[in-house]
Image 1 (cartoon, each protein chain N blue to C red):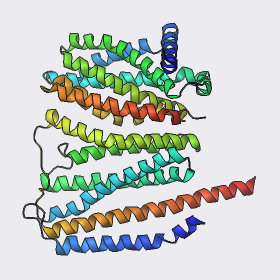
Image 2 (cartoon, rainbow over the protein chains, first blue to last red):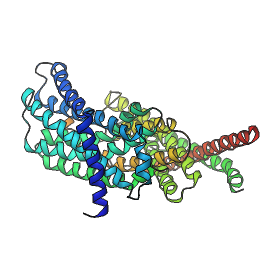
Image 3 (cartoon, rainbow over the protein chains, first blue to last red):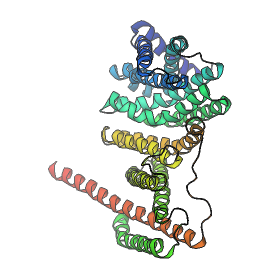
Image 4 (spheres, chains in turn blue, orange):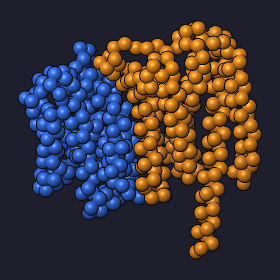
Length: 213
Length: 230
């Protein structure tokens, strides 16, 4: 394995191991997404249509991701790990990629519970909808990891992350909802892939400026 | 110093902006013919569209300065990027207001999700409002300048992506599309539009320069005060 890939793998493994031992984030995300779905059952009036439920699923996914992202940089911040990582010889974008992969794993694990629960409580999901979720996860983790690093370094911390993050998720929600309910789901999946490409490259290229010092 | 000589140009820029805006007002209300369908309410087109285009230009300008900051690491680009985005946000808010008035005049509602332009500006307005939240919650210094520059670059990527998203969302949110103004503009109307656009851009540039002068004065004053107290 080349140096860069080894760095990324080591960083992602560090986050996954930490989560396995401390179990801080993932149980909270799982419980949150399930509670949200139950709240939605009561928020949707009788006969409000099946399509409304798909929209709410996306709200649940975005907010669950937000919950995980708010915690993403806490270990680095609390123990001064980030200073050490920045001083290390590896490329700084590897820090972002490692964290994004770990966040993706948490989000995917939460969705492994949330999507069957959604199918059980509300509507079945087809392959296009699941592909939409997978593609949107990439965008959420790419953008969210970078913004969470900024938020962690700011005075307002967790307060500012949703403000920075939600306007950027609007295209993802459009793509996700479209891939769940539209007859031409392919267009929406293509759009999600485009979003992922644009913002993953942008985040990867700019992350070194976020962790400077 | 180069800043003081460029500061002396600000009154001239402001005069040009005032002249162009004045000329465009005359053209809009006395020269351009009234629209056959929409009547007098169509006049807001000459404000709304130039303001929207100017807002885009300001956001683009702010992102360009942000890119220059990340590249050259000169502090002045950070301030210029911030002021550009500040002006863009002001013009963005004006776009929302004028768009809302136009929607009321032509469709009878203050807000229309059918209008892609308005929805896009709402998204951008939220995005750039968060820019200010970010800027004011990070200590002044290279870190803040970096964060703001990166966020400004995300903004210019978000504009086309959101535009595309809103177009796609039409299919499942609103199957019907309103067309606001056909391309059939007469020569005088098009000329009026161009003058209004130039006027609005000049106005934004003048405001940008004025704000920049003020912000630089502030910074210089602070440095001076720190030098005196220490």
